[in-house]
View 1 (cartoon, rainbow, N blue to C red):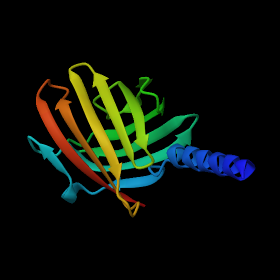
View 2: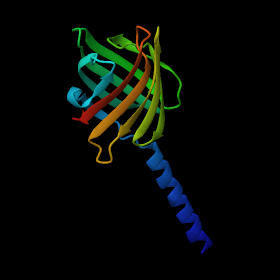
View 3: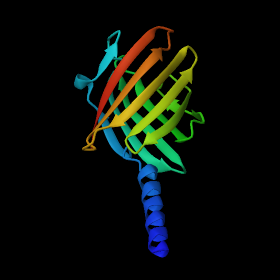
View 4: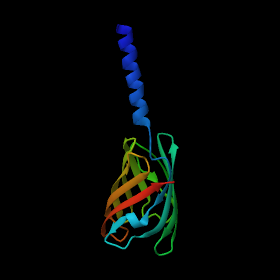
Length: 155
């Protein structure tokens, strides 16, 4: 009986590790501008595609798209899910560093900084895995308060 109980506890522990290590954000996500909100307006992004790939203990993210002023977006970062800041390289991102923590397989929190820009956010993947909603608030690159709800669709 004791041996069976030990195996059951070990099996449960392995399942728990597998569940918490999962990352349902991986893949390619396209911003749905019509469903997204930015305040005060206007929306600063015309198009955006985020490619999320697994990296050692975290994430490599590549954003490509276009800002509403015509500026190209081509920015990349790699971070661990422990909240340690990582550098953002490329063009079009209003921040220089980002830190990310994984809450569970479908929820992530982040903090972004650069110059006057400072924001915190939370990304949540829907139960069906088809939508990623990223809510943020903070100060934009001009030091003005903003809030946003960006809705991405899995590609």
